[in-house]
Length: 227
Image (cartoon, rainbow, N blue to C red; front, side, top):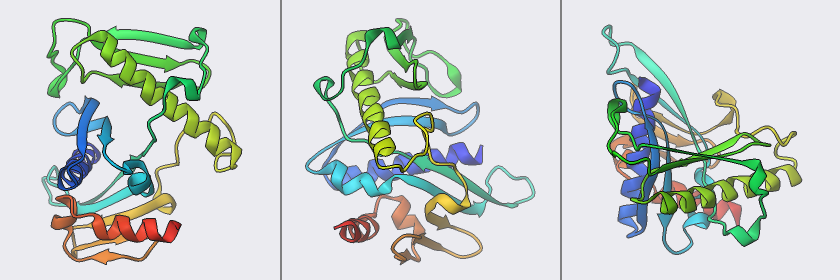
């Protein structure tokens, strides 16, 4: 539950950041936990240079706090992986239709209840790599399929880029391992208040502001270091 709640907090953080920038923000799909929070979510953020600005947010984010789900008030550490992908169009990467499995299902909300009587949600699986994308944000099955293909193409393109640059040793490796050594930023709410980016050393003693979308200092510093 802690990890799922942490994922919800991060989703809200980036949504607020996008609102502050007057960017578009759409949740294309999300998988809810049984009680509270989300297991994963796919979002689309639109605006000028959004990918270049946000791509440094890719990586593991760690939260340390007193767990609101612990009857004994124990401190808990949660991890969440953020992936930032550029939007790709179909002409940028050709996919064999025979390599795709396309399933339709009803959109679901918290607790697993169906929120749509029609099977408008779409799940596309790229069989050779096992990459799966689900989208349920649009009203029609066709629109959801189009969005899902865009996300799938972006993930496949990034996988190919990572393979070429040897960031991943095997094509089947899809994500960075969620562990202490791979974290890019930590958010400590207890026993002290601190957000720290482990790449740039930038810190803030106001985690509430950061979690409310005040990310400019962290994002700008990381972006400047890339230049």
